[in-house]
Amino acid sequence: MKKIFFNNLVYKFVSLIIVFPIFRFIFRGNLVGTENIPHSNSFIIVSNHGSLLDPPFLGHALRLKVSFMAKSELFYIPILSQIILACGAYPVKRGITDRNSIKTAVEKLEDQNVIGIFIDGTRQRDGRVNNPKKGAALIAAKTKKNLLPVAIINSHRLVRFKLFFPIFNKVTIKIGKPINYPVSSSKKDLIQVTNQIKDSINYLIDLTN
Image 1: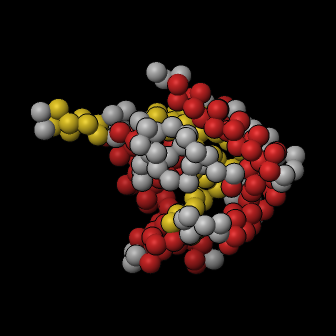
Image 2: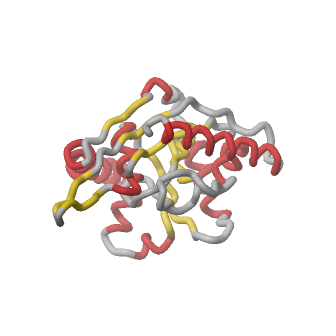
């Protein structure tokens, strides 16, 4: 109980004291499509990825404690490891199929937690979904949890400079309509749903152009 209380305290501090002013005031962050957020306690947020600030921005904006996969190296850094653990993150080894991270994601969903997955697996310079991985669809198939496509606009270009002065771009988070989990774990079904997520997120991004 003490650990849960401590973790919740750390999460609220990070979200309200640190993330709130950065997202709301520096980047003038706003959220569109809140009516699409499922009412169930457990689902999978799937997003594009352009910045290291994406996880805290998403969690704060959606007002949800979202458990994200984070590269395993971060969990060896003092203080930072305690913070990201308190915020619900769990480690994943990049570049290989990490069965432990998939198992952890399944367990979190079964415990009615919300998890977040960046579908490309790594940051993209253009801020779009380019090479989506099937992991989100696979976890959805295993748990029968729906997927929520989310587009983060401008996180790949947070700051630009004009005459050496920084100009902070506005960040918009757009929530799409939920996507049903794959009917099976077959490669065909996983690819179909993965492409559906990709198209949904990129469509949300293109609506801003």
